Length: 72
Image (cartoon, rainbow, N blue to C red; front, side, top):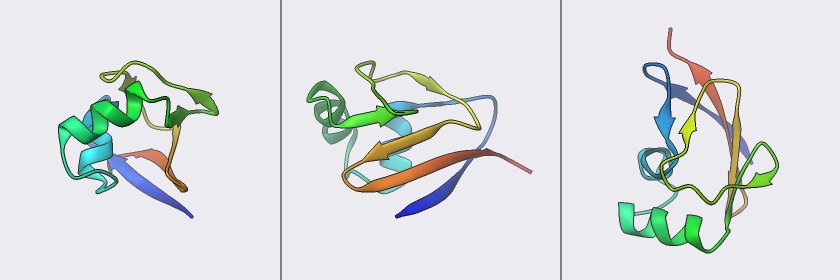
């Protein structure tokens, strides 16, 4: 399933995105998922927990896809 997530400001950090989108219950869960190689950004496994994501990028995690869009 694919959905859009509105980015407020220039970027959002990967760990914050996973939590804000309700894909994980806590920051610790987000960090564990990234460390385990379970998160992809634009089709590539992302290992940086605080990677700066910008509108236009896509995040895939646990069968969910988020497309980042600009606010406004």
